[in-house]
Image (cartoon, rainbow, N blue to C red):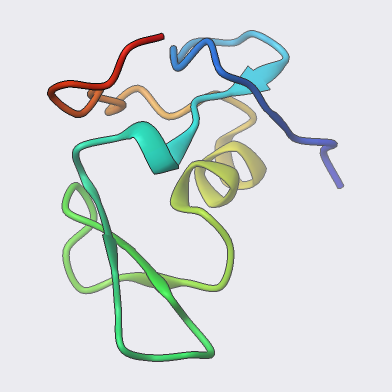
Length: 74
């Protein structure tokens, strides 16, 4: 299992930190308590953990679709 550290750098790539999905414009929250997160980049998929963690676990790379929400400062 890959150790994921969600940082506040908010960038994708192959670095040690996954982008912070809570700052991403694509993140949405579902009504399903068992799978509370969804990502607009992956329609129809819902997640137990933040989608960026699932992408990192599946590919070994940080999510390349990260897009900072408007008004969020680093």
